[in-house]
Image 1 (cartoon, rainbow, N blue to C red):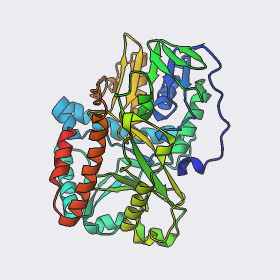
Image 2: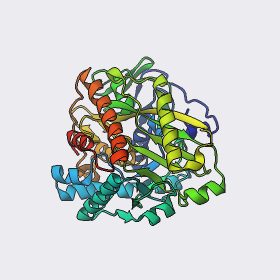
Image 3: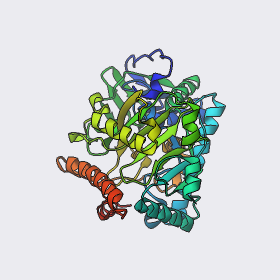
Image 4: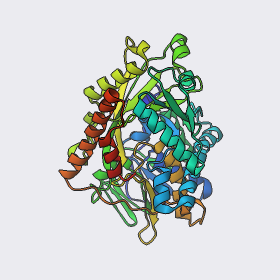
Length: 448
C-alpha cells in the first residue's frame, strides 16, 4: 500500500454492480481519468445517468500511488508538438496544461477536498556538467517558444533544494505538490454527491460499442469510456495498446526541522534532476520526503501483478540515490515503499478521444505525468461527449491514435533495453562529465 493510502482512515467499500444496468455514460476505471470525466459531466448536465465501474477500489491504480506532482508536464515536448502540429497547436496544448494545475486546485477548494495542494513549482537539478548542458538547452528551447522556464545558478538552486553537487537547475512555477490519495478519494465523493453511481470490485472483462461486460452483469450505454491506463492490456484486443511500466517509491517518516533547514523545499517544491532514468520527489505536508523513480523491469506480455509493486533492487537504488542527494538521510530508515504500473503508448504520445460512430471514448498514455493530464482529459471528454465545440476538443492530442506496440518478445526486449541504456548513460555521464551518445540515440528512437 502506498504512503498516501496508508495514512488515510479506512473507507467502507462501495458495493459491486448488482446486475445488468443502463446508463447514458459508462466509465471503466475509477482513477483520476474516470473520476474527472464523471465529475465534469455531472456538473455540466446533472440529468445524465453516469456509471463508473472499478475492478478494485477508487484510486487503486496509479492515481493512489504516484509521486504527487500535479504538473504541466506532457509526455511530448513543445518542440516535438511544434514539428508535428505547428507552433500554434503546440503552444495551445502547453497553455492548457499550465492552466490545468490551477484548475485542479480550484476544484479541490470548491469541493472541500483537503489534498495538501501547494503550488511551489518544480526544481530540476543539474548535478553533472552533462546535466547542466541539458538544463541550459531546455531553457533555451522554452525561451524560443515563450514558455516560462528559469535557469537557476548553483546558489539559487541550493537555496531551494539543498542537495549535493548542485551546479544549477531549472525552475517552473507550473506544478503543485499534492497528496494524491486524498484527491482521488475526495473526487470520488464529489462525484457521488452529484448522483454518479460508482461500483467497486467490478472487473470489466470486455468493452464493445454500447456495452461494458462484467461477470456481475452488463452495463449498456451509448457512450463507454475506457479510463484504464496501465491496466488496459488486461482487456481483450488491447494487449499491445499500452505498455505497463512500473515506477516505485519510498518515503521517510516525518523529518525534523533541522533537516529541512538544510534540505530546503520551503514552498514544497517538487524536485528531480536531469539524469536520464527519471527520479522525482516532494516534501509532504507532514514533512516526510517521498521519492520515486524508474528502473523496475517491464514484464513479459504486458503483465500486471501485485507482486511487481515491490522490487527490492529498485528500492535499494532509490534509497542510495536519495542519500546521495541528501547525506543526512543515510541513517534514516525508509518507512514506506510501494509501486505500480503507469501507461506508455508506443509513440509516447498521450491521447484522448471519442469515436462517434461507436460511442467508444478513451484517454491515457500519460507516461507517468497523469495527475494533471487526467484533469485535462476529463474536461475534454466531457466536451466531446456533450458535443461542445470548445477549444479543448481542438487540442492536438484529441483523436490521436498511437501505433500498437510490437509483439513479444520484441516489446519485452525494447522496453527493458531502453531502461538499461538510460541507466548506463547516467553512470557514464557521472564518470566522464560528457553527454551520453547512447542516450541521445535512444531519445531519437523514442521520437522526441
